[in-house]
Amino acid sequence: MTIKIDAHQHFWDLSRSDIFDYAWLAKPDKAAIHHSYLPEHLLPKLKAAGIAQTIFVQTQHVLAENIWALKLAEANPFIAGVVGWVDLQSEACEEQLGELMEEEKFVGVRHITQDEVDDDFIVRSDVLRGLRVLEQYGVPFDLLFFVKHLRHAVTLAEKLPALPMVIDHLAKPEIASGRMENWRDHFLAASDCPNIYCKLSGMVTEADWIGWTVDDLRPYVDFALECFGPSRLMFGSDWPVCELASQYGVVVESLRELLADLSVTEQEQIFGKTAQQFYRIAPSDGTASSSVT
Image (tube, rainbow, N blue to C red; front, side, top):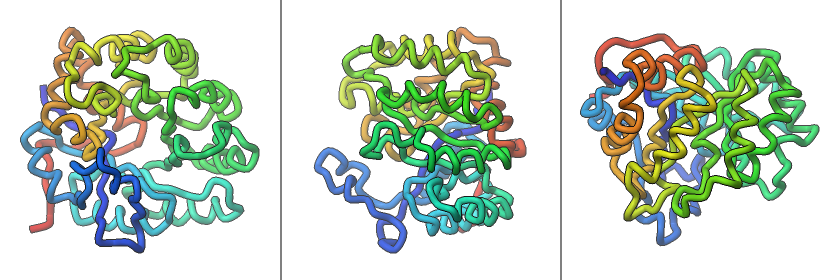
């Protein structure tokens, strides 16, 4: 099977202090990824894994990152789409979104909800107003949740039934401890909402970074399959964050092993077609390429 799309990866350039604020990378446990990651660093990994396209996902709450990432996408054909950021709380949200929608490779919006002090941030009236702007224009929204935020997914789906949403990283269940009881019910409830999708991403960094195995991930992947099915699941590497616990190729191969019992059609759905449909991106033949030399 040819793997086609990585629906969740990042770039950052620590020399660009005007854009990036990565104080969290200075922590001792993040030393392995405390340097810049750019398209030329990812491209060889994509080629080795047979990945043709990727979706860049925002990391900063600044409009400047949108411009920077879209320029990278223009120069690197393998970047099929950019999930950017707009200020959902601002009266200027619609204007900011309109500017992004003029860009061919702009495909969605994300806000780093997990870092908000207010656990109810995503359902506040001012934020919902911004999300309704996204809904009006049919712009997908990535839900970056911890388990404690997952209860809000159903509320969002009910208030915004025409807004396509995707749960990043399965809402970060506590894989290292094998805990599921605080996650299962809200995850299942979210899957009952037809406009909510899920990324099979970010799992290795929720597991034991040193000693994780494929079997540690299996209960969570199996439950996600049971809840969402292949048509609403998509693969994401969460590179370079995944390098805290693994290598790009290992992440890809681990998910392939976990999905081995699915039909070829179902595997192709998760490894490409769901992302194409959700983010409305054009398919690509062959492996990843770059125009940068």
